[in-house]
Image (tube, rainbow, N blue to C red; front, top):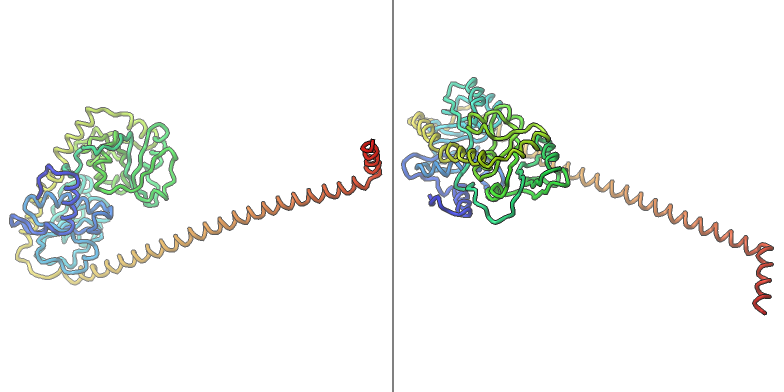
Length: 428
């Protein structure tokens, strides 16, 4: 593994190498950890991938081999060198994981969905992001459940600037079609503060004209974005707020030296971050952003760097991973039984159907948008044409009226008499 004192480009290259499987062989006989993730494309913007790679980077330093096992490979045999699988996605079904391979679930979000999985007891250990989530999962399984929140790669989010201009307030919340609690609050904040918004689908986000939208930012751009900001606004979705499972943005922004403001005050105390300002609406956000104490920012940053780095997470995870491998050693069987093999196949079919549905809906939506736009253009053109025709008709009518009046005037006795007088005057 490279020396920690590397550039941001070196860190990005390391992440790409980890995603490409270049560190799948460990150096201390620990075995290989496969992370079941949505994709192995580090440019796709999938949060589960960056969390997996953050932990994988520091597990590799502890002697583990690491690799990503993306969705499209879940229905294929697991690589033979894998000794333990960490599931990052609630839709993962472990039917094709051999009996001798350890299984760990990382419940980072969607706690209720995880709790209702009928195969939850297949996991040798479960990690959750909060005590509330741990208690919910523990109701559904006899397996060990540990609180292991997501964290931050402190070697990537260093707080070092790249020369870009200072930003007063920044948010990096993506827009996926549904209005979020923080969206309206940021509108209110923009009335009095400079707000820069990085996020996907900005073209569909109709917001205040005072907000500067800069579009999607790559994960590897975020360290500089946060380091340039005075305040970072976080927005935790309702399923996460229900169990106080906080976003990576909380840890990454604080590690970068910015003050993070969030709409979820639950769970901050158990993270040691009880000083983080919170909001529930626009006026609350305005007040929270105004409460900027440099000493508080430095204290919160110190807590994150001490307790919430992926180096610390890897140290805690190492024990569970080794225990899972040991517990499964010697077991036989190429899969987890007929039911889970069947469930794996059904889940693939459902996932394909969901994808096809989304593609179909996207196509229909696109056609509908173009149709609506075409109708609007036609109506506008028709209205413009009708207006132009009306103007021409009005002018024509006025011309004809004046022509008739002119004819009437020139034929009148008064006009003819005046014309004769004018001729006589001209002859003189």
